[in-house]
Image (tube, rainbow, N blue to C red; front, side, top):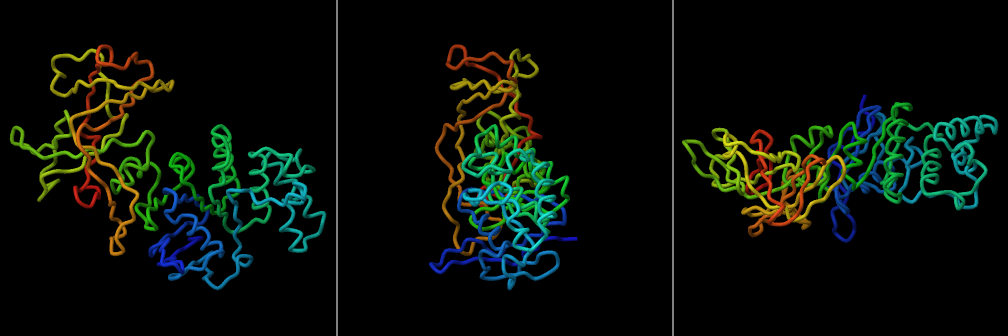
Length: 392
């Protein structure tokens, strides 16, 4: 069963700004779907249209098989968790969680049982007598989630609920949300700008840019097969290295020359073009501390300019003789196609790059001690159209 359907949904504001362009999206019953994208891409507007806080300019929102465009927020059977908690400061934690149940007129004993059950599942039963000002940020967010859970809605809508928390708490509550989703077996539609959050939480992830759906896939597929330069650059930390690669003929084969590496292309892969855009994940650059003569043709010698030890991995920053590709924040033309990646720009050489190598590797920055050999596996390279930026 499909729990939430957005069919041709668009949102235009009175000043002419189009926040969402003709979005088609279906969230399955019991699925945790994440909407991710940079600030201003329209993801929170999508959530607000599902919740009934914004009316779509075009299209239909369906919740649990019922058209919801004309339903008030209270009649949609969804619960929303906000970024700023939205707790009643004069009420106790118990009263905050119980508020919606009291509004429905449930008996006091039933309300107390449900509140304590939810508080126990969130580990905040000992906080029920406190008021929000006496709670930490993580505790307040748990109360906000409890207030949504206690209603037992058909779907949960979460608008960047972890963005106000510190890094450690975000990791802790990500795990908590994943556990709650498994226990409740209820539909979650979750909005974030944090691609790590999206990758770790979502059953599927919808990537938005400028109000347009760029790709909808599992986290693994988004990472392994990005549909465009934008998705490739946005999903992954550190970001994918992007280079312009002119085509050349070497030994009867067409290769893409990405800096010091020649990448063989399949026949017809770059038909009618004299260059491609090449994407290289930092972890696909393999360090060879003692290269043999047989490997010499596959390796590139680079100089580490900055070395960042992160424990299990070390990030190495260097430059190569190639033109870098950067994704721009400008909005595309009104007549752009939904999957168009642009705009992006091609800069002047040299291009900055990052390699992620084994954390046990001893490296120093500089021309004397920072020389290292990096091998690129051609099978791991991503290729993109030089004009549209779409995956080839």
